[in-house]
Length: 88
Image (cartoon, rainbow, N blue to C red; front, side, top):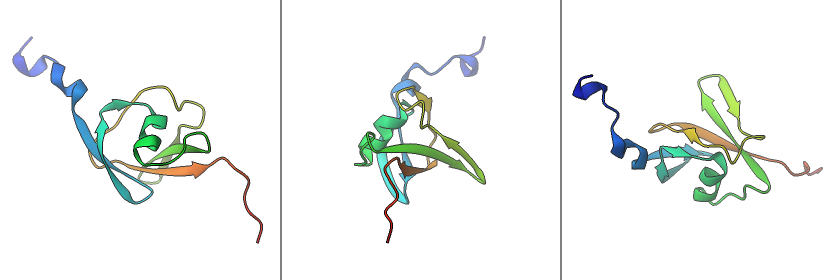
């Protein structure tokens, strides 16, 4: 095993900046839960869930909000409300 093959122990503790609902959210740990991301974005995880956007692919975390995921620098997410849709 070379030095390049050795996992960087500090990489677990590094943070990234991502986008949630078009707004930058800095200081997000690389390994974190979707509900924690919502909280960092000042969004209530009790009434919303997170969706990762990669091109045309959407990865919802509505049933796994407390399970850790790996996030990358500049990834894009949106929040989705779980409440009723208002009727105008």
